[in-house]
Length: 481
Image (cartoon, rainbow, N blue to C red; front, top):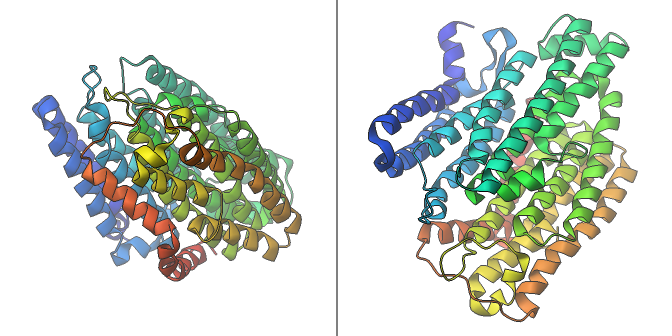
């Protein structure tokens, strides 16, 4: 394939990269006054990248001699990433408009765009080096975003913890890549699969373990979850919403591609790792969330818990399993963004953010609309029918059963009951506890509109989307097989 065709296949990343660089110059010249224009232009750039995915070049297959893969799987993941990134930009201005010196700067949407470009490279990687470059581009932007509120001690601490632990995870991943390269003689996924299929090798097995350990950090899967609660709590809430959605999609999609394309012949080896991480994440995420008093920390443990369910689908190692992972990711992104949009509305009479679960007490009386939306998101996260969260869990469990992993599905189902406790606890606080001081009302029509759309999507109204979603995810899964 010629260079022009290859560049056309990478058009979404080119749009994001050129857009980010141009907006960086605008921010440098325009200063603080350009923030609003840069933010909305960044959303337009993400829309442009999404439109670029609709062209035939986005399904061209292998380009750049195998370094990059333009297929339906990558396109599906990128759509979720761009939607989450756009929402994270749109909801930021009101959060930072607090008059405490940490106002929104035009660099914020630029960092989101650069991170999205890195995530696009991650989900389209066909080589271990492309994988690493994309992952580091995403991570470097994320470290700055976590500590974006320079005058806030928690934000600075979150950025530092994320950077230090992220550097450790990158070292582990690089060591795994070096082992895989040393024992296979290649970094291309297709050639690595050939090496794994040629026979058992202790070096390749160790490389597999270290590669999955590095990816588990990015997914915040147990036992590499330790950064998640502190970073989610300390980072600005729009950034936390971004971390809980877009990078999660990219990390899980990357893990799926590596497992299926690069290490498919070694499914018996990596399945054991995935099953352990899955069950550990489901159980730990559920149990650790029970005693939390901060709603952002609770949602962090919820994120860990949900990664466990996503890994149930990956453990199946089948086309149906990959499809179930994509279905779960789509519904998870909607539930998570909805939850954090509610958190953004939690402000006291002076307009300061409030994050305690107790502050939700009696919200059904003071803010009935918000309480109803929060209840929908919590019930869906708990997997209670008829909300879409139930169908997401059903899809991954069904894939596991079809793959002969019945015990995994049973344990996952039982452990999901534990997680339901802390979701239902929030509903109980909102509807049955004595009212706490009412949250400050605002005219944030965009945020209320997003909450309404997301709540409707995961409600029974979203049933109409299940069939086309199933068709799209199955087509995306076929691209890996």
